[in-house]
Image: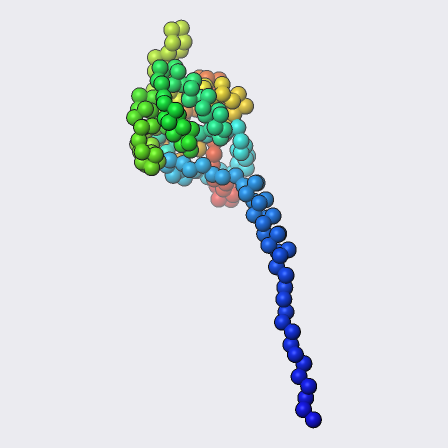
Length: 209
């Protein structure tokens, strides 16, 4: 008598619940992730054993390249717009709506005021490369009558702090940045009574220090 063969049934797994979980996880990471702004120059920060974390919002970032060029950014567009209106008003510069949008769309700014309009008239695709050749000056400019002379760097800091008094200053300098440049930045901040700021470094274990 022949053997009776048992028909094998196919195994089917319902992946619908797994798809729902993946969508939820993706949504979670999108909502909680902090996107890193594109920086005009690459900066390799020095190491330190400090573990103090820089706030993720309400921050005025000061980026210093290895050749001493200074760039800045604010994380809130409204603060950036207010600071721009303040500074251009002081220098008597009138920007078009298109130029203002280019400025606020830029991840960071770092162009001397006398070159700002020329820079903002560039093709948007050429701006990221062009900004590397500039940098915010720390040389003093003539102040208003009765006011002490301030540098463009100080004017931008003051405008940013007036736009957002809660903004914390964070300095991110390259490990090869000339010491005199970093010292100059800190000195100009102290002259403005801005004595509290973060110095961004890479974490280094104490035994490696």
